[in-house]
Length: 487
Image 1: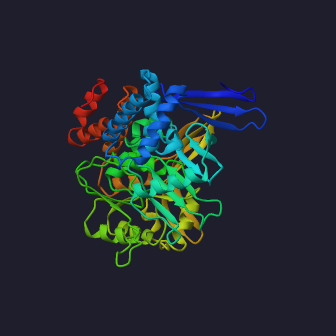
Image 2: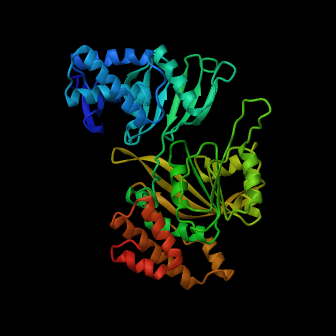
Image 3: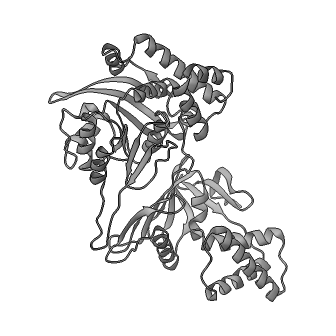
């Protein structure tokens, strides 16, 4: 039941018949709040749950695998019902099993937040403090969940065990990836007086595709077709924006447009990129806390990648010395893609020029195209939009020389073309492509993007199938798509 002090804004099911989410607005403060509602248990169901938990405490270790665990827990519940001479209904039994699974293979009271596809980040700022979430539609929301000292300490242990790293006063910071693909940053009281603090960032197992981005208004079909043509012809790109803007999502989507047989090397702190290319080589940073075991940083991986001859070198985020090696790779003829935290093209260039990146000004234009993405408010909703696509032509003491291809119009909520590409014109001038080919390809690829959106061909498999077949037989693929079928 919704209290009179709040106004219901939105509601939906997180898990059908089990977990509900209610977005409400506090009438007194105007703040939006996230309320999760879990199953209510009858007296008999509560007794069965409590007694089963007692059995769990004295039982041997749980079997591995969620299916085995579920079967084991179900046997304990059956045993408990027999002892208590209680027969639960199917609905009551489902509720009991939910709580048992939540607290064993799940993540306890924050498990519903992790299950909610609209929630991107879960922020725990210490014991006895409200948990906050980042909601894709409503941004920061305070949840109706507060963890006690005991609950939070138990969660810290569970997370460290599942990541496979020790966290202690000697090593009070933990970073890693949980089995479900959740990225975790954790700090103990040694570094956070109000701690422990935990941030859990989620990303989709099935990547968001170019068609998703077009249908959601993040980018236009014309802009995406232009980027596709540029990628095919060896033009490097850097995606810029603040935290949570969608840089990695856009990067992953663009990688689906690369020729399927190309050798792609990706370098990340934590695995987020997910592409189907057979020659994809994912490299991941390794931090070591063990004497005699080497830490592998992004700088090391970028150097290694130069020796295995990638067609495309992809760095998940440029932060430090690896930026210099990345740009040296561009200078040696590799096509590169990367992201960097920055609010604008000029801010990105300043970061690249400054320590610890220290990229020489002459090398920076080798990252030919800079794509700015951000969160903006449109019609009362927070949405992601590509704000600007510019070609960086030169970096001099007097400033930057660039050519803006597309810019977002707030009034029209549309990415508007401002000019033709200087870089594509250079390809024509050098004889690598003809102007006729450019015009035909850009027009046809726009139609392909629009058609895929029209027929809902938005899954990763569908997008890769189209791009793979287009490289083999563009005309046939185009005609098949226009007829409303996948090639």
